[in-house]
Image (cartoon, rainbow, N blue to C red; front, side, top):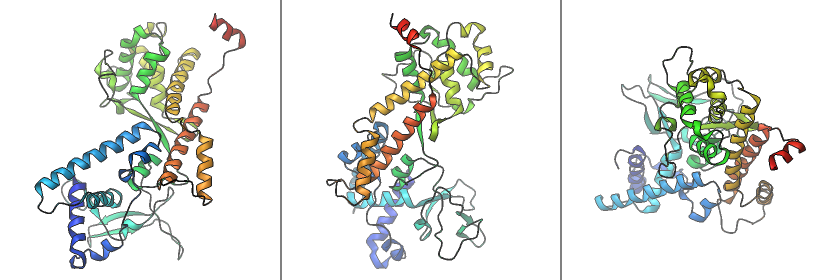
Length: 381
């Protein structure tokens, strides 16, 4: 339990809050929010409104973890915090803590700083915080001049809406850093079970990918080296995804169908055919590392693979359509009482509508050639 800095800091907050006016931090604690909109504090029914199972499961794992921590605290503390106290303090530490180099010899540390943690987020913000060892202060600075009365914002990072909702409890109206994630497990399963392009060549395809991630062979630039420590392909072609829940490396897809380059490279390798691999894994790796198309057929199969994965993600969120989500959002924004006792519905709607929009943009950007009527008939035959 004491290995977790956020639990330690939460207990410190609870201690000082219980001290009331006697605490040196009383003025700071008095202006802190009494509640937060982070999903950690959502009910099971509210979490389902997110519609994206991996996010829901991640939050539920956290909720279960902190319940177990609560049990330990009740066992070992004379006056343990209540569940409400601990949850409040954890959301304070999760959303209001800074990580910085405070001039010591060791690693960066965490701190909570009054006033500093009240600065709002903006995706284009220039100001930022820094630790100034002389005279030992945590200061807000801006490289640009600000007008009197102009709000000063900071950026909480180049993070997507899922991160902002998870840790800060809000989804902005716009976010140029919004992106979705596709993981290796999804790609490998789709290649095995839905496309089945040269399934007997999986071992050689994995060899191609290993060359691109971790190899001393001449002529390789290792464009996928960042994947080496987490990739599933080092576990071998016999990996059983039913038994192994690892997701492997996670690839990003940004707005307007902007795909991470190594995602395209990885997908092209997974759909290589017997004919493609006749030149051998090493030579194929050298062809792929420039991230250029291998052939028209390979490129179509690559995009089909990505489409299958993206359509599957979209299908998992299909209990409502994007149009329905936007219509309900509009009604809430217009002041209609349609939440039906779901106080976090607005943020859930913003999150899931943004995610669906990105999925649709990515699918559209794949621009897969449609077969001619003659080819379609031949395929059916």
